Figure (tube, rainbow, N blue to C red):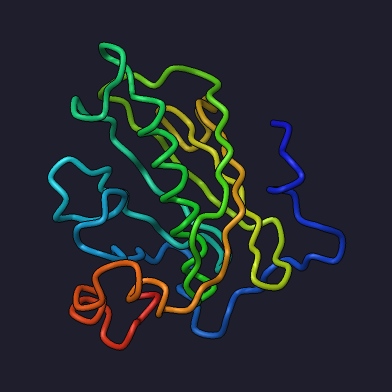
Length: 184
């Protein structure tokens, strides 16, 4: 995958270290919002991704492609696959215990993903510079070592929790995150 300079860490970017108290490898990460399209268990047609901490700086997740996720008959919609990549990358950034938003997402589609298949996702950080985090992800069909169907590179920007309160539903944040908890 050829990344743009926007999603490539600049010289001097650092690799994140696991934070004290980071979830141990294999620890499930909860949904960051119950009605989130990507990870919310209460979203009726969402992706329902359930991420697991890998090593304190990366995560894995599985996405079962359902009928509601198709574009062409029998195949996952490309926009849904991009949403899955954005979500797994966003879950990996939770490990930094600070709020971030997607600034740019580049997605490469390498193989069709049939409805009914399980996409094994993995996301990791390639560098941090100031408020910018540079991340990558891949989705493999059928198994963690299956063929790569989709890859992504992203730039995420650290924001304050007031960003979500100002532009979203502040009461929902308070109801579900108790004083803006980032990593439930």
